Length: 389
Image (cartoon, rainbow, N blue to C red; front, side, top):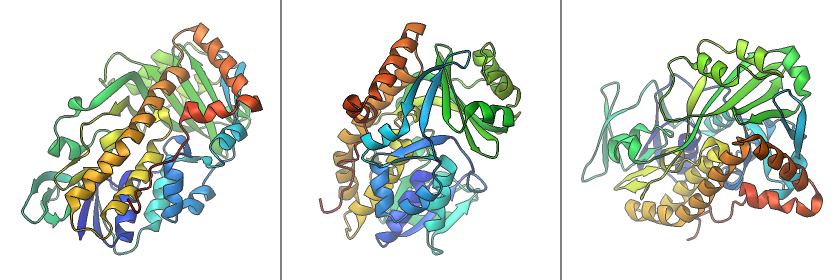
């Protein structure tokens, strides 16, 4: 059996690894000229944790994890308002949680693939059609290939979804925010962070900072927005939203690069079906939960593993895809609901919401109430393994 996978991000590489272990030959297409490095810091937990263990990459992922003792919320002047004990969060997740850069997850998955995997960078889909034998794809370099399956793992702005299912606006649920991220170097900001992940979450938006090592700072922003339209001047948009704030913001904004700023909408993808014939969407392409949910990478790995599970040893590909869709859908809906809850929690609408959030965060650090963390963040990974069903 042969599969074409569109996208060499977390979902695509996880799908490639899982399908290879299920006995499939895989060809992975990636528009970028190579793997993306860096990316924003995320908390890795949920269904992807167990999936990574099953795929044999959990140890390598943990080796790239960073040490964080707590997550601090500060006000516009940088004064501490509340602090979330990371140890309590890890306990609420059953010990299955650690912070890691998104780019490091992709690196680990890529290195786990066998030499036989056909990875084609600077290449993407140009056209797709179904034949009596499976899928026929024309590529951006003019070549044509055929396979038994096409996996769309090309992110929230999926080209596969556009070619097979329809225009993006039919499936995108905009949550009212834009996000941006970049790296810069500053010993001054590093000292202000003190080795912890600190976030300034005020009505204007949220700015988060973390020292990834040697004064290299990851800056992460979320701001309220009226539409999905991307601004022409990214640096200008950030300065407009955060330029009047204090703390480390002046230096961070001054250090924003002219290029190489990650910028996107905060949105979810909602579809009546993730599969059509022999085409299956995995990860953000089919069921983005939004980056504020903190489980996009986790669901991408879990989805890739589930795809390998349902397709192992079967010739009825369409029935297997329908089974995966049917069984994972209610679980994904739960994670998306948690994502919408998190968006309103991390970016308070008023200063009163800031106060309420700080009280809630500090309260949940109290051991008898720490269990609420698991419910609020939807830590559970139950139900995402489809083996033997």
